[in-house]
Amino acid sequence: MEFKDLGLHTDILKAVDKLGFSTPTEIQEKAIPILSQGKKDFVGLAQTGTGKTAAYGLPLIQHTNFNIKDTQGLVICPTRELCMQITKDLVAYAHFHHKANIVPVYGGARIEEQLRRIKKGAHIVVATPGRLLDLINRKAIKLSTVQNVILDEADEMLNMGFKEDIDSILDQTTVQKRVWLFSATMPKAVRQIAKNYMEDPLEVLVGKQNSIAANIEHRYIMMKERDRYYAVKRILDYYPDIYGLIFCRTRRETGSISEKLEKEGYDVVALHGDLSQSQRDSAMRKFREKTVKVLVATDVAARGIDVEGISHVIHYNLPDEAENYTHRSGRTARAGKSGVSIALINTRELNKVHLIERIIQTKFEYTRIPDAEQICEKQMFALMDKVVKTPVNDTAIERYWPVIYKKLNRFTAEDIVMKFISAELNSFLDYYKDSGDLNAKQEKGRSGRDQDRKEGRDRDRRGGKPNRNLAGSGKRFFINLGDRQNMNKGALVRLVCTEAGVSSNQVGRIDVFPGFSFFEVDEKAAPKVLSKIATGTYEGKTYNVELSQEKGSSRKGSYRKKSNKRRR
Image (cartoon, rainbow, N blue to C red; front, top):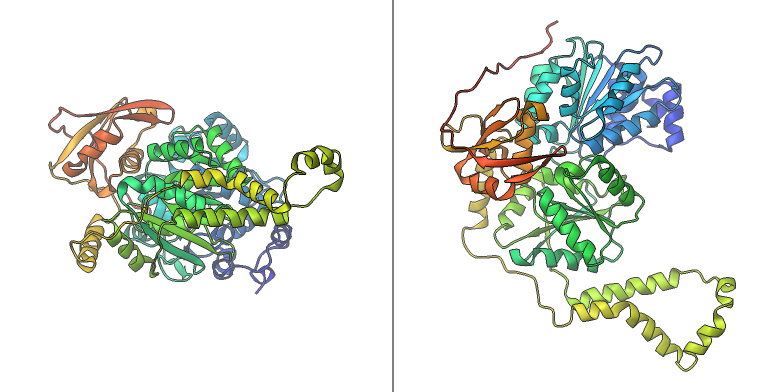
């Protein structure tokens, strides 16, 4: 099947041809004919990197009337990077619609420019939930004319605590809209959104739920916790031609690892939420242009990275939510290419690997951390390949030849080769001289099967959403951010979960006031909050977190869940 067989208009097909698209992917082949008709709500389940943006983007362009100024399309996605990537793709799909105004709306950028473009008449708005809700509250954008709402990466938005924001946004839209939901996984919370805001949706599943690309090799290495950083260095040294991602859990860890690697001469750059928008743009530009070979990122910041040719994904830590492994590893092996996903685990984390194996229905291969001899051998072969492939510019060298000949005349050809190799490899030989074996053995204890069952039960109980009823068993904290600082409940959940490494089910009652907020976490998680987010920055504002002396205040106001389910 070709794109011309999918029911797309001529101008859309011209844009597709200009982009060099040839054959539609499976999700595109199944979704585009349905969405082009524009008569049904739709749920598309497909793994990361399968072409979901084009699957909904091409029909969205087709359904938009660019001759009027009304906002007709709304795409909601979890992160700035994904927001910008989707916008770029939609602009390309609308190449032959010269009046098209497709506006990205996300936090961390000047809101004045976004307001100006919306006021001009935004045909399609691509937005992150927090900034979009801000614009709605300012009455700067009206969603009553929106005909198509797309929820992209729906599962990740819920994992990041956007549930309440999405409910508030969808309640502002007309009941006649069509909702197209795309997700890599389908947890209960996503099902609930479909139930509340969609009517009898058509559901298309590509592959298996929680599945991953077949052409990714999944490996794990095991070391003692103190050797985690040194294990990463050995992986980078063992793959001299790596073009990859290193995932860390928190912003602090991301910045620390990136800074250490950069000081030691590695071509890396960091991407995390504490960076300004210009710094994030610069980091992504360097990575896309391959000025740097490795991007060190948090899960949240890396969402939306759609870069071709990523060879390796390295999990400095496994994600707290096993489903997020699917999203991480999906950054490689895109567009039919192959890739490698390597998880670093300590001696107590093997059961977490087994849990992920069950979810993605793929086995991990145990791989030993390379030793000094293997690393130096790889580096030497890489150097030889580089020398063999290097073209010789006789004209340029000719003027220097007398000096070169004079310097090297007393050496044999074999001596010269050995010296050039040594000039490149001596630093590795010196560094790894007498280096030890970083591989660790699995600790004895609870059997893997029993522990897997326990983790599975724990995960089922978590449910992936905040637990608003800790029933007084939690610790209450104060943070000096509130409504006036653009803090809301969803943002506070994301801050606590992402930065402190706390599971969302461990977050309890949240009270947001104009200049400050209170939040509750499970007593067992309280030390993490105190140690990891005692202070930091949020959207450029410095915050402080303290254990509250308050023994529990009554909530102001009440929250009543509303439904916008259509009735026909």
